[in-house]
Image (cartoon, rainbow, N blue to C red; front, side, top):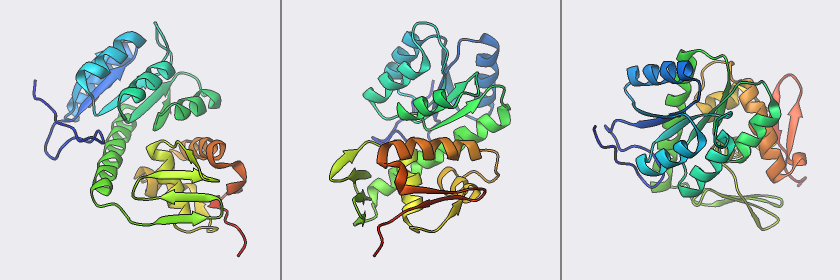
Length: 244
């Protein structure tokens, strides 16, 4: 098997075949997802329960995980917590229920995106590619970081260190949440549509992921304060700033 070298950010080096760990206890779905990702050119390893997933992630060092929420042993949320404690890994979470609570908890423990079953293999493959491109862009930004700290009242965004503080207290954001916040902060008070945010943050060309945007906004509000992000119903979101 070809060895894949990764940067400290978890992105594969140029030309390397990237590794995807697929964790799913339904054998039919596991085989279908694995076959599609192998056809897309990825190296794929699989696990069917929580403990095996954590062990495989530690031993194999994947570039991305496709992770089912409901697993034997312990669930995907616990898998995500344990794996992210070892090293940052982009996670696409799969859930059998259209349950917003599950989605928000998943985002809160470090998942970057989610899909609700049933899903199309084409869309899953597209989202895997999008997540990996975002990780590679973040790795490049770490080498040539944007300088300066943006302060919007009590909210502080440090681009170089990819850190956020509220009232001088550090706030832990996932890579996706940080990118979403920066996108809103680039044009404070301006309303950005869900479609614009999907294009800018997720590289997603159509509107099929608008609920992904909504769930990430809710997770972000819980961390930086709900009052800082304004909803414009039927349009999108705006980052509020203190009056001059």
